Image (cartoon, rainbow, N blue to C red; front, side, top):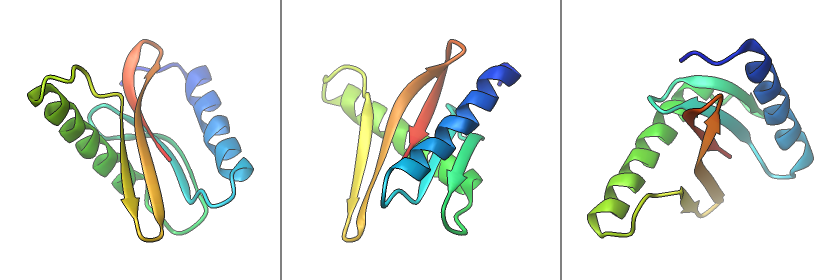
Length: 102
């Protein structure tokens, strides 16, 4: 994916800022549409590349399901668990479709 160095640096800064400003956030990962880690910040020994790949797959499932039931385009997916949740949403970087996972 061809994203400028300036945008990549800003993405990394934003990931760090989101992580530091919000209590309870364990990871912030920006992924390409095909599941590659673009920028990330984590508080634990989480693997951003794995999160990026899974978030991309979950996002794709959300898109297919919403289209199948004629709800138009999926904008986000939330996965609720006993210990918290993860929020996966579509974003644009340099005009390219990407995924933000928090």
